Image (cartoon, rainbow, N blue to C red):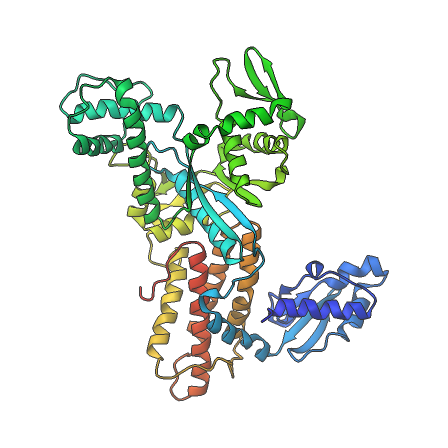
Amino acid sequence: MESIELKLKQLIHDGLLKLGVDLPLERIVIERSKEKEHGDYASNVAMQLARELHLAPRDIAGTLSEFLKDEMIEKIEIAGPGFINFFMRSESLTQIIRRIVTENEHFGDSTYGANQKINVEFVSANPTGDLHLGHARGAAIGDSICRLYKKVGYDVTREFYVNDAGNQIENLAKSLYVRYHEANGDYSLSLPEDGYHAEDILNIAKIIKDEIGDSKMSLSYEEFKPFLKTRGTELELDKLRRDLSMFRVTFDVFSSELRIRNEGRIERVLDTLKPYIYEEDNAKFLKTTAFSDDKDRVIVKSDGSYTYLLPDIAYHQDKLERGFIKLIDCLGADHHGYIERMKSSLGMLGYNPDVLDIELIQMVRLFKDGAEYKMSKRTGNAVSMKELCDEVGVDSVRYFFISRAASSHLDFDLDLAKKTEAANPVYYAQYGHARLCALLDQGKDIGFDYDGHGLTNQKELNLLKILNDFPREVLQAALTRAPYKISIYIQKLATAIHEFYTECRVLDRNNIALSSSRLALTKASEIVMKNALDLIGVTAPERM
């Protein structure tokens, strides 16, 4: 079933054809009217075509309106400089109820991205410690982007890139070597300058000690290192997986930098890039300025070791060779300079640089009692994702983390996130859903009129229009990779639900006919709120 907006667009398109104008549907704008006196929907198409047709917008609107007769429209008015305002019959709005209930969790789905493979890489934290708040926001946004892409039909692969071949893994092994000795009662060693002091390293060392006892105590660091690197990375990744699972984030693929290196992919990339490589001061530079970068980049240092850019190029080629039509990398805002060097590198490999899009995600600041809150009371270090979720709940963390554009800094108010009142947006939305569930439970003996006869109250009509908006809002949020747009929609829907609940008596056993229509609207609203919350990984409780 087409949405009302699409039907109106098609009606305008067909009307314009009779005037000799073939305007593509995507250029026809339909907006929901903000004021009741301006109708339900409006279009500025007459003003849009005024210059092209050399006519006054009101004259175009007047002539066009004669071709816009349809049974779903009660009347049309021309307003202001040439707006076409549509007043819809209530029956045209209530049609959405049956569609929502029929499609249920699939309402809002589309086939826009059918048969197109997209790879979204996000989090990709070094396996050397707890996930911090930057990782957490990246997890919430990346996961929500994947949910949105899937909702509109794309074949989405969620990927985590494991940096298991660099200096950080060397330092992990050195730290575990010291902590393993300590776990076995030997305190003669000191942590290296670049070692990891966090509690999780102590815990991992204890696990290793429980697994192998003191059997490796006589080994030198170099002899013990391969085991410590492998097992330490495995245990860190196990912890990251557990924490991410708690945060409702899963991955389809964990790609290893070590695999990229061991398969010879870096050497193959170097060979392909030869025409763009030059040497200076015994280092090898990649001429990324030949494309869109602002300066050339070192890929092999003077000591022969690779910079991080080179294995990253090989990794992105690996992803593209797996058949993805688009790569999305969700990275911290400090990676701004990374964008053009990677796009340039892909251009050198023969790919369209636009195959890669990078979402830069700004950092989070915590506030408590009106002041910035930085340090964990338990560890003395920065607050981790798990600690924040333990403090305010996963729902609040996920909702707040996607509530603003990824490019915007986020100030997270711990006090607000814990409030059980309307000022807390996640509570406001969830309470709206719980209210609907309570009505459905109390009215289960009444039944539903899915045709919505008698729904004429302005609060009912407003709610119906917002429900009609959902598929369009989902597609918009998906194509712009903007989960925050769903949180905006959720707040509009929650407001409409609360207003409907307050003004319209849903359960009236003296008027069963109207109650059954209102219960059907209640059911449709409950479904859409649940679907919207699910898109950002937030639960829809039935009781609160």
